[in-house]
Structures are given as structure tokens and as C-alpha cells.
Length: 108
Image (cartoon, rainbow, N blue to C red; front, side, top):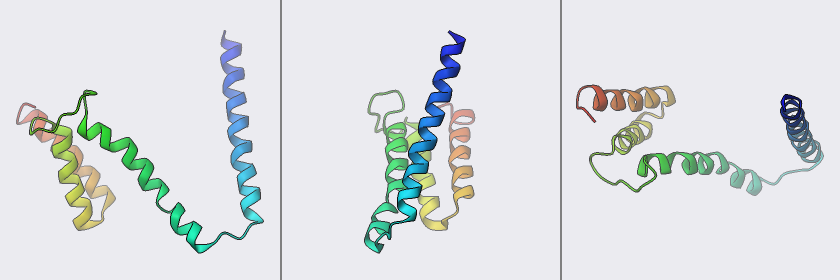
């Protein structure tokens, strides 16, 4: 069983390496248009949004749009902080601090 798991991990690592390396070789020889680069710039934020929004809106796998949803409150405050300051570290610290305050001092 252990040998199978190690083999699987090695196989996945090799596959991941060659798929990324292959695309790097293809793209190295290809001129990418400015329009394509602009479009690709939205991919990270789309992936990030896909990961974060369900956690904020449905923390218990059920839609919870209420004042009792501590994640939604912290997310809104963090979003405002990010919009106003454009400071990633400050935004993360504010979001974590809001969760802490809500849990420890307000009993959420």
C-alpha cells in the first residue's frame, strides 16, 4: 500500500512537471497578444473569488445572509479595507482581527 502511494505521488509530480514544462516551451516560442495577456490577468481573481465567496456566504454549507454570519461580516470589512488601502497584509490582519473580536468579545 505504501509503495502504491509513493508511486502515485511520484507519477502525479512527473505529470504536473511535464504539463507545466510543455506549456512553458510552447509559450516561449509563441508571441502572445496583448488582448490575451489582458484576459489572462483576470484568471487569478476569478479563481480566488471562486474559493472565497462560498466560504463567506455559506460557511456551514448552507446560505447564511445574516448578521450572525461572522465570516460575511469579516469579509465585508476586509473588502472595504482592501478597496480603500490596497494593502494585502493590512486586509488579512483586519479580517482575522474581526473574526477574533466577534468570537472572543461578542460570542459569535
